Image (cartoon, rainbow, N blue to C red; front, side):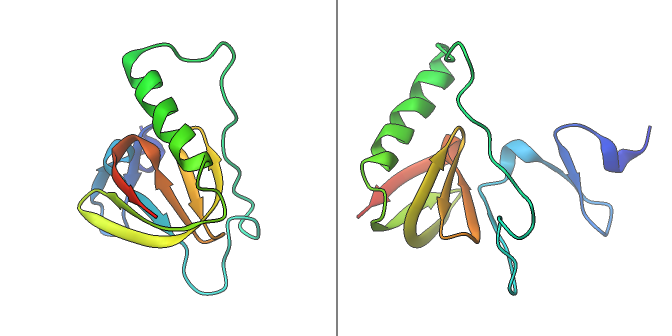
Length: 111
């Protein structure tokens, strides 16, 4: 099996394998945006996830939606990212059109 096609794993140019579960955020460089790169985010599943993880993720999504358009600091994965909350999706909050932060690992939101 081609290791670059392993579901749930990102393979770096040097061969390093990284679990997508450990990725806290993606920041696009240069003039790229999620829109120009053709990246789209997931909508809510039907029916809604009622597991413990689903309920916790839903709670942080609600808190983020209350702050849409607000410049905030978001702490996740040992890093703090500052920017305006533009959109909130399942598992992802968009800061601007260049940064996507996983909602599953958010430790704090500071408006």
